[in-house]
Length: 144
Image 1: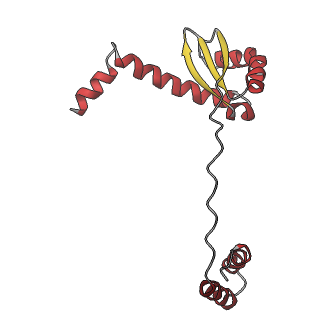
Image 2: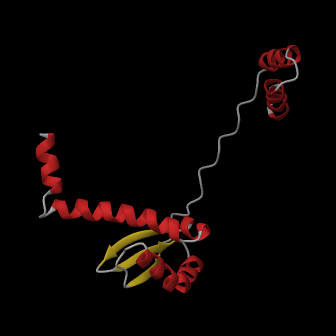
Image 3: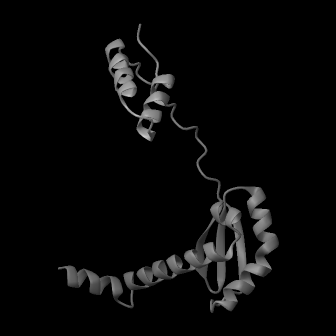
């Protein structure tokens, strides 16, 4: 069964083309991350490649503008690395900007737990563990 699925995926017609294109996109995306300046690479991604045209999705208009200015350099870099590149097209593809769910309030330490942690801290020699316990006790909310 696994062999027949693999054969289907690698066949020249149909799904084989999709798999080959997906592999090519993966390689080109990695190459793009090497070529693009790091701050722009983090805010964009190679989205597609068709007939020598590379499509890049930018997370904002400012990033898209800068990438459009760098398009000739990007084309040259792709060509140097053996990629047939006639041009670079940049589109804004804003990421989901919904606010993150609020963090739940920390549960306060019970008086007994606070006392046990304080006793443990006091019994330890100077060490990173003792420092961590001191920070925990300083930040922890206490139940009265």
